[in-house]
Image (cartoon, rainbow, N blue to C red; front, side, top):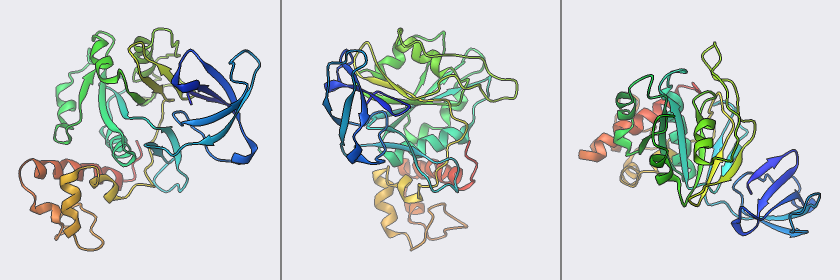
Length: 293
């Protein structure tokens, strides 16, 4: 599934970007959600000729799911992308200024959904990248520079051969980056508004085939990243050493450590694991604040 638009889905048959058909959801699927990245069964006219329409009759089980909610009190989960292997979190170092909280929340969503997170920094001609990049060093999150003056090959080396979802606030240069990765993508770009938040430039998610193989899913610029569906265990379980340790935590432990959790088993870890505990607790604190951006 490579695109969704007003009740019509674009499907790349057998993953071939040159063989795309437009399909509708079969009646028997009811209101089954179908999102970009879903693997589906399609029947009917598969020629892909103009004005033809196939039917989606099956949605396969998802290997990974990137989800978010409107805020931390919203019980309704929105599936952003299905079956992506990676999440490229695009962050501008200036104009608009970077928001660590948004990146932390995106990392949490990636870990909980089974995606490998990567941070891509843009506009590094306006501000240095080292301090912001160091924020996530203990989580072993790769950081790559993706500004207009940076060689795009550094990003393609990470993306080629995989399915990668891209997220970021509007105005951070995400669509500009996509246009460099896929020269014929023609994603709309825009300037940053004067109120400090970018203007929306991409209006719908779409999977684009990379020249070197693989797919990149460009998502609309978002203003908040709610995580009402995420528990502390969902975050800790992404790290095998920490997941094993919390088996000894008392019932109800939030894993935030003292004073809230004076008997948290994570406090008994040492070395690299202890450093990771500190970083993961930063993620847990970020989602506990209810500040969705």
